[in-house]
Length: 274
Length: 290
Image (cartoon, rainbow over all chains, first blue to last red; front, side, top):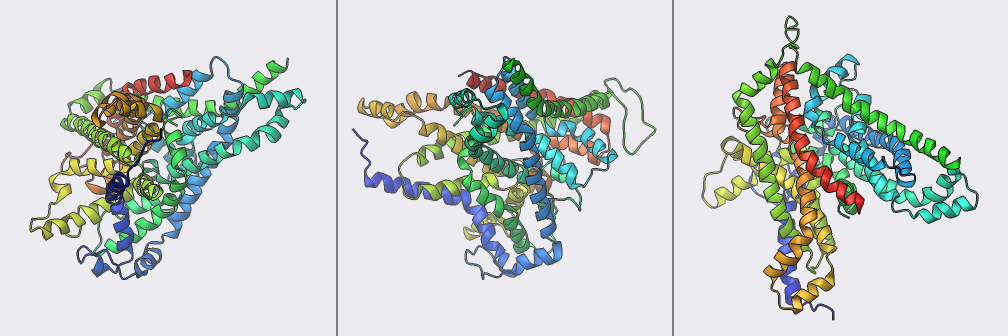
């Protein structure tokens, strides 16, 4: 017997859900609206209808050079994710398809490195970066974020690879495929969706990382996190400009994020909730 | 022989990840531990040599230390309370049949993708600013004085911002867990005349127990290190009113140039994080055995 759902019940639930959703989304919505206002409009009190001017976006680009930090963010987040994938794919592969007694221990240990509070190693990392001339460099930040996200990347890939049925491997082996052929012709096509999800989630995490990116960069390598943090002290009329810069900083990742809801749950809970 | 080859290959495939993480874990941590027993100030090269437990004593006797521990606990506890209770409520709501489910989900999940400095600045300037923020406008509309949130209630304001960022995460995970609840069980309970409250306490809550545990543990790891939100809003103040342990260590290290003291603080942070990690590993480890 199917559960009967009355229309009345559905309407009430719909109204409640939309109210909650709009309240939660409101700060983002209001920021987007304000970014389309002029500065005097932005501080003229509550108003949901902007004059749809792009003036603030232009100002942020011409006066503060939005494009450089944006490119830094792209390079650092995509670069660190790809580096992490290159290192992690073989590892996750080996753990999923040739598990030994120690595999679980190694996985747990990798996860434990993620628990180390960043601030506890701030001093040595800062000094090492200073001594190796890596402060405010894209390479330094890329390597840093690669190391931070490596455990999550290995874990996510592992949970995906583990779901690839082992029988397929055996069948390929029976047909005389070597390990390399196995990987290229049989497993890669089945693994691509998992790798793509991992890529997506880790670009999001790297894009939003706001401790190391702010502390280890000043101008040249500063990604959007550091760029936005520099807006923390108001300079005159800046509400519309702040909104424009904020909107541009979050828009790309917000859209990527909407596509990755499911992977998010799985990736961030290390497979504990699916 | 083939299996021996496979094993060697498997080890070689794992080696880069394991070595990188080994170095990443051991080198900086060993340096922090070493510095924590040294006199080391970036501005004063005459301060050198073994300091014994002085740095720990210095950190421990600093009145800001206990305040920062307390603030850390308030942030973690406050945000957990809001996100878990709110997350369960919203997840239950979204589990109902509603019109526009997809769009509602997208709207609710969005704050999670907003980078911390943006989230903090939006709240600081667009929402909570006494002159130009929306809350100020609302207060004025009803004839009240606008509240200067970050001056009057700095820690509470930060809790609100961080909770807004993490509420989507809790909601999404709890909703995922909720949707895996067996529909037949729900029906059976309904047919037996169990009301909503009974179904919630005896059926839904036990089913969510694991997801709630995971939410609490993962959020705790991130919440112990809240940083950017404090940096761009209150900068730890007024005084030390909104300084958590992470921010205090940052202040000691990069604003006070006291490497030794900051390192001692760092080791204390590691110990705290390890206590949390111990429980998380057990929860996640159990899942591996399944």
